[in-house]
Length: 139
Image 1 (cartoon, rainbow, N blue to C red):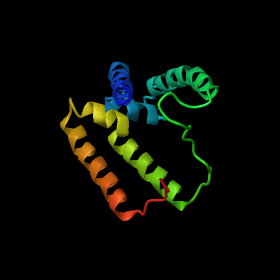
Image 2: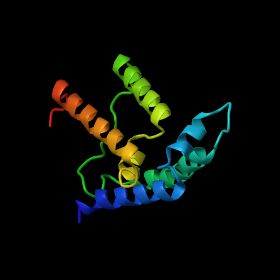
Image 3: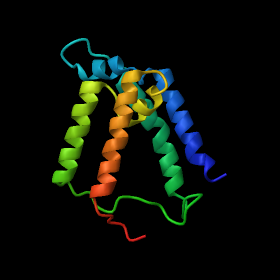
Image 4: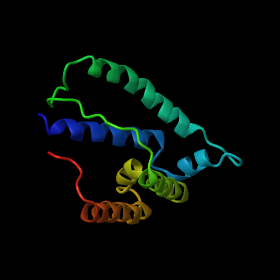
């Protein structure tokens, strides 16, 4: 059962992205076009996600431990450094130019040749990071 939980969560997320139209780059680019034909749909999707997430998060953190792990994995520092700024900038530039972020590009991979190229770039970038960056965890 434990391995099926992430699969089920990803499936629900992908269905939600598809039903809300967030796999269509025009929707995302329309949201980013503040001075043109602005489309608030993405803001509504994000707001809905937050409304679902907040009570579940509160309920989960009232527990002594997660259901399928011994401890909660939360960031231990909120440091803003150059790597974070550069990474966020690259993410934002790519998101704005292509209209896809990682979740929707994986979902749209099934429907779009453009998404296939972007997904290959995403996998290549993650692989390059794994090869070039030393692991910092101690587990």
